[in-house]
Every structure is written in C-alpha cells, then in structure tokens.
Amino acid sequence: MTAPLKTIESSGDITATMGNIGSRARAAARTLALAPTAQKDKALSAMAKAVRAATATILEANAEDIAEAKAAGAGTAFLDRLALDSNRVEAIADGLDVVARLADPVGVVTERWTRPNGMTIERVRVPLGVVAVIYESRPNVTADAGALALKAGNAVILRAGSESFRSARAIHAALVSGLRKAALPEDSIQLVPTRDRAAVGMLLAGLDGAIDIIVPRGGKSLVGRVQAEARVPIFAHLEGVCHVYVDRGANLDMAKTIVLNAKMRRTGVCGAAETLLVDRTAADAMLKPLIKMLLDAGCEVRGDAAVQSADKRVKTASEEDWTTEYLDAIIAAKVVNGVDDAIAHIERYGSHHTDAIITGDKAVAEKFLNEVDSAIVLHNASTQFADGGEFGFGAEIGIATGRLHARGPVGVEQLTTFKYRVHGTGQTRP
Image (cartoon, rainbow, N blue to C red):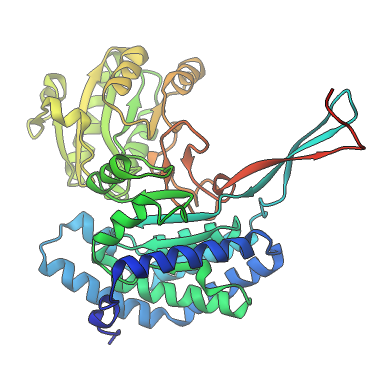
C-alpha cells in the first residue's frame, strides 16, 4: 500500500508550507540556471530508470486513485485520462529519455549583430526561473512538466489534482531520485504536499514573487479560474474545440481514416476533434459514409438538417454544440458552403487550438492554413497530433493558445526567455 494520504495532508500551516516551497524553488532555480547540460541529462536519464524501477509502486498508487474516482462517479473519459498501465508508465520513462536527448536551449545565441560603434550584441536564451504547473487528472504531467522544466534550467512546483494525487506522488518520488543521483537540488522539482484547494490560490498569487509563470492543465473550470485569478503570466488554453473540415477535393478513404482517428483514438484529449465540417459540394459522396462510420464506431453525432438527412440516428445539434468540448464519443457535424464558410465557422465557434483540413487541392489547403487563426493547423493529418511528443519536443508542459511568447505545444524552448549580452571595447554614449 502507498503511504496514507493523511500523513501528506497534515502539513500544518499551509501558508507557511507554500511560502517555504516558493523560496526553496527560487533558490534551486539559481542553481539550475547554471547547471551544465551533462548534469541535467544525467538527472533525466536517472529519472527514467527510477520510473521503470518503480512501475509496480506507481501502478499501485494509480489503482487507489482510480478506485476513489470510480466511487465518486467519474466518467469514462475522465478515468481514461487518469488511468495508468505498464505501457503508459513505460511511455512516461521513454519521454524522460527523449527529453534527455533534446538539445539544451539554455545559453543558445539566437541572434548576433554589430553596431556602427563597434559594440556586438547577442540575444541568448535563458531559463524563465520558477514554473508552477497546476493540473488535474493526468499523472504523466508530473514527469513531463518536471523533465521539460529541468532541461530548460527552471525549477518547477507541481500541484496535482486531488484525483491523481497518489499517482503523482509516486512518479515524483522517482524524479527526486534522479535529481539526487545527479547532485542537483531536490527542490528543483517539488510536488505540493496537500490536496487542499487553498494551495492553488496561493500559487495563483505568485508565492510572494517566487513564481515566474503558471501553466494550468485541466478542464475548463480549472483553466478559467487560473486565467481569472492569476497574478503572474500564464500559458494556457481554455478548451480544445477542434475541427476537421472535409473539402470537396478530399479523398474519401483518407477522410474516413483521419476523421475516425481525430475523434475516436482518444476522446478525452484536448486534440480530439469535436466538430466535423463537410463541403456541401462533396456531401453527396462523402457525408453519408463519414457519418455512418462514426455512428457505427459508437460515436454520437449531433448535426444540422443536412447531416440528419444522411442518417436517421443523427441527433439535432443545438447552437451550444458548436462551442462544446465534449471530451467524449460525441461529435457535432455540419455541412458548409466551401472553405470560406468553414473558416468563418471555425473563427466564430472555435477555441484557436487545433483545426485540420482534408483536401487534395493545395491552393485550398494553403488558404485554410493561412487564414485559420489557431495554434495548430493541419493538412491531411489527424488533430490528435496536437501533442508535444508528436512535434519532436519529447513531451509538452501544455498547449498554449495565446499569442504572447509561446503558442502550441510548450516544450523546452518555450520554457526559456532571453537576455541581451553586449560586448564593447570602451564605448560610451554621447
């Protein structure tokens, strides 16, 4: 059995505990900012080994989380996000190894130029400092966030959701073991030792200036609270209302393969397709087989009149359906008047997360990719590729849909900022 939660939650004065976590993270960040690449990579490799060695412990902790969630009435999609098995634990370890192999962004000179007075100016990547990650049901975020923050030279404070607390604690123990083996500060990756929601409010307030950036990963209510209350900058997306548009130039077999994967591979991820748009001029050939395929796969379809006419099993879509992130085996479907209408629909109802077009017409594809204002746009590929690992980032700390600093999967480069180094030979300003 894992340690009783009461021994973790009885941490005394939460305000003092959180303040101490912040000050220790700030001190660790100073060390990490100067840590050589080899030392960080040694820690990450040791973490991967520790996760593999602790598989049984992690799965035992996760089983307790799952049992508690089921007793509380959690739905299928929620349980899928929470659940771990041996393959998912191995994927967590693999992710740590991949991050270890990534290029270190810290200290990279991205630009260099010389002024007329002879001064040379360099723009160089530096860590953000202290990152706080507030997340809900995904235990793997513990390792993903810890690894990416460390590689980018940042200390990280992790606040796992109450539903994944035991799993996160077991994974965190493996991460600390890796830090210890590499002689890096154990405070580099800290897990908030309480499920008390008051701790979230303290993180959002910034822990007296200790926190430089907050990343929320979870449902709409969590992200909405963070966006409303945070007193420090955030990387966040409120929801993933992702679209797949099937254009008149699409190949039907390709469209069927992509649409099914985009919706049904994993319905509970933020990159799952929530709305299907079909070009009216292609509807006669494509609408009925696409809708039948989804329904036969166990996906509920809510559509407009044209979609309902394609299959009597289709339910009527309401206005609310076009803005809903179902995170379940449900999709809204609509017939649109070409690519311009599809783009207009996405602009009106989308969440600027991930949207895809299926077409063999390169000009139409370019128009869609250029004009859809989303963090990720795809041509002839599933929206489920909205993932840092699939982008080659090793993992992601979240998907950002804002426009400042980072957008799309947040990997190691996005967890750095920059400073200017100026080299002179005695210049003074007149």
